[in-house]
Image 1 (cartoon, rainbow, N blue to C red):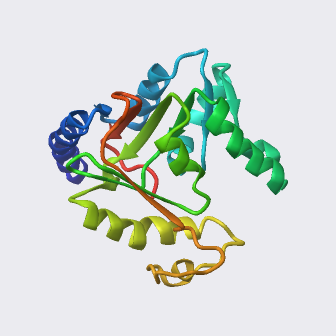
Image 2 (image 1 turned 30 degrees about the vertical axis):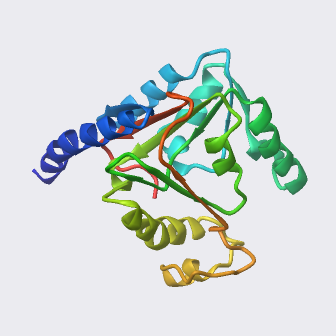
Image 3 (image 1 turned 90 degrees about the vertical axis):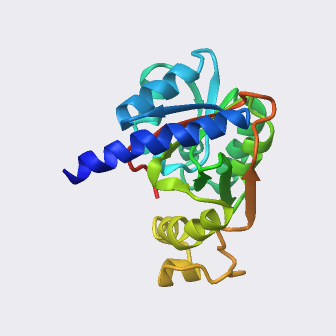
Length: 216
């Protein structure tokens, strides 16, 4: 019963957020399931596009990275560099120049249709702003918040602390306390903040809102 009630609510709220995203020139879509999110993402990525991505957990969770490989897309995958940091960094730079489509998620989306993201290196934010001709964003309903203030709160108390625990070698206060300390630690993951209010050009950023929980 609980799952049914949540599904009913999301089917009302999700399209409302999508409509507000569309008012801000995003191409936006609501889908109910992870499987539908995967199919919609593939539909939005032309087969002749070179595809790159950052460190999104969500795109792996829905199986998008595996699907791109399986379908024969030309991809730019920084993880192929292994532990070679220089090669890793070079791949991230080349993605901004050579990738036609960048796939990612968002740390939070306001119900008014604004995307909020925070980065340590800034490569993901750079792709949002400029470079790849198309950006495909996949978000679960768990990332929808009321406004920018709530988005910041979500990032500081949910996204950043949980992401911090993904990396064994990372040492930030939020990893150990579960909350933001507004730190200036050397490993700080929150070096750059970005609010994307509109897609310019129109439709360059495409947002898939999924009725299921995705990512952190």
